[in-house]
Length: 167
Image 1 (cartoon, one colour):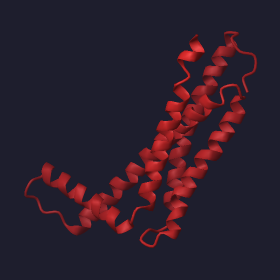
Image 2: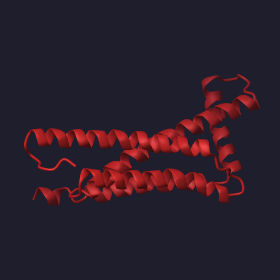
Image 3: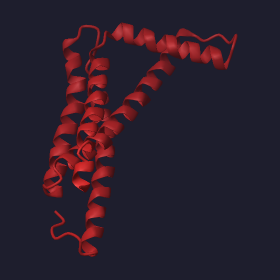
């Protein structure tokens, strides 16, 4: 009966994971100038709300917008790394930890690469090796945390005699 109760978990994880990935992909293919304008408008309103009447230069606005966008990308890819690894590990429950971890690493690295690489084909966007590597680093951080916790959990189960094969 316990297995039937948890059948909804894996589809829910896939739904969350794919929603986040599709959202990031849509932002990646969005018109660069429109995206920048939306970000600057949002930052400007926030700054005016926090410091009413204070003048903000165009340079300051651009700089803060860039920083906020970079932080948002890192957070998003970190979350993709965590959710993606959990999703793949939950989907391949009967497979070895090593195989699940390899699959997770390949899928997450591909997502981080392609969300930046598709920008080469969009006239108002630019490809940045640095930004792609930052995205890969954030995905890797999420991936490593989940993989390490998963491995430690399996090690504890093995020590307690609940499982035979750790890898």
